[in-house]
Length: 105
Length: 105
DNA sequence: GCTTACCGTAAGTCGTTACTTACCAAATCG
DNA sequence: CGATTTGGTAAGTAACGACTTACGGTAAGC
Image (cartoon, rainbow over all chains, first blue to last red; front, top):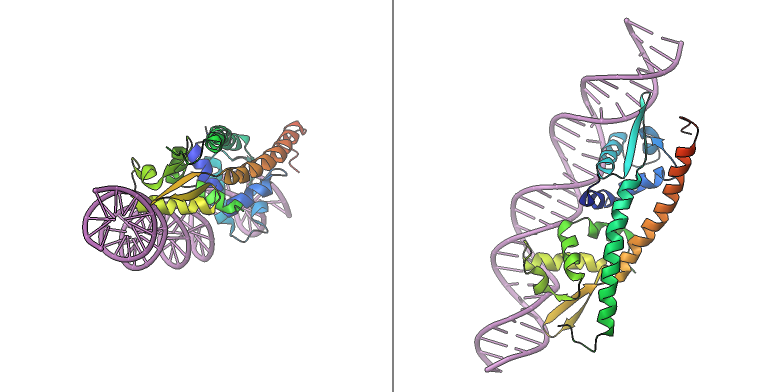
């Protein structure tokens, strides 16, 4: 099960978000992901480990290659947090606006 | 306008997420946010600056106190990213599942 | 079997960041 | 006006994180 905190940590790095973007059209092997990126292949491997621990990608062996794909679970985790937060925060926000003047407590 | 990358960076820190949680029911002054947290008040101020730069909170002066509240713009930024990513990634994911056998390209 | 391709891991380095204490400015209250 | 409350800023430190090069291990190809 993906851990919420791990999802936020994983998404905080720009390179990892680029990796996710590259996987969006479909699965890719590590070398294919690294090709065109500005960092080395081992760096990509390390990023993939973080993304995997967060439940954002999944992998499987394919001969000597290792193919990674988007894992919907991590995205679902984020969506759940956002949906819940969004709703109650917006309610509070509206209630605040409708409150008479500067009665902030 | 909140910058996408700043939103992810801001949300990556656990203490900042706790600050957001504390603001969820409604606006609070800096001292009230810091009270009960495990970090000092100046640390909270620094976190609030990061959250503000990301468009996740907004503030206004109220006498000598400074009141912070959730800013919907930052959350909207995140939601936009997630919605777009979610949709196309899930399409690719489904297409992958329905693909005959191991034809990974 | 030997070479080649592919990838994960180890170890070390450098920059960033979250935190603390100390200090200063501004508004309120007596 | 002086004292108090409130909070942002400065400076210094310690820990973390992203990166590199070097290495080892496994599957495929000749």
